[in-house]
Amino acid sequence: MRWIDLSNYSPSGKWLEKAKRATEMLIAAKTKDERKTIINENSDIWKEIKDDLLQLSKGKCWYTEAKELVSHYHVDHFRPKNNVKKYENGQNETINIDDGYWWLAFDWKNYRIAGATSNSANLDEEGICRGKQDYFPIRKDSYCANTPDCDLSKEMYYALLDPTVKNDLIYLAFDETGMPFSTALKGTWEYERVQITIFLLHLDSPQLVDERKKIWNKCKMLTNEVAHIMSSRGEVSHEIIEQSLTDKLNELRNLASFESQLSSTAICYLLNSEYDWAKRIASNA
Image (cartoon, rainbow, N blue to C red; front, side, top):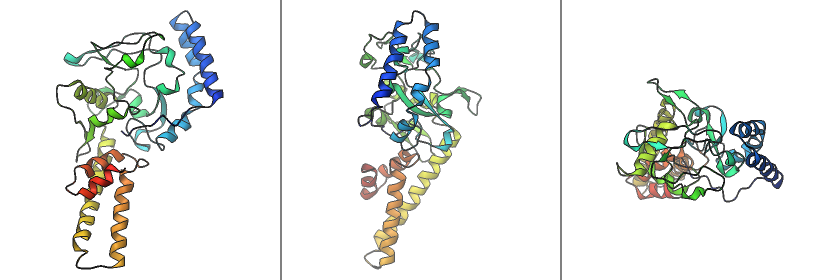
């Protein structure tokens, strides 16, 4: 998961006006069924800016940072628009059973590009249902917004990591096997957030894990080759050797770049490298 910077984007004025009118209709509606009809009949509104949102992530799912691995893309409502399912998770059971965040149905800042594997209900290898679906778990002791007048900024304890919140990304990392894990201390809410995020977004799906492992091993191979070239440069200096060094360093930079699929895995490898130059590549990615 990489940070998606929303600060330099806004839909067109025409789109914003259309979204505003639809939201006004929602607020004027008297019942949940009326609101649901309005949302369904105006679903093309968020689809109109799907390509714009994809550009913000260089064509990747905002949650998994994958492309073809997660199938076709959805415009996900981060806070669900029609219904919020209750999520139970042992002693950290979370709340949120209501009509959904219907007033955010046409708020583009509530949209996230999500691959179908992470967004839709699907069974894992053990037959357990995964996928974000209509979940937006919030810790029991948290403020919970349930009307347009509520202050969303007070929902400090929602569980899912948000790719548009830079601080959220420091809690998620990947190991040499391709598995995701939490960098937060076990027992903390931040640790629990990562566990819930991994489960609901199916970040540990075999396809994602296998591909991350390949990237990790590719980074390891390139790093070892670069280290070997660097250590022997004093003995032999040759234009071909220098070009090989440049090419391999550029390969590492490319694997860690924002444009590349699953680049967070490459960054995790480089940050854990014994070489300072590798860590600098990660820091500049």
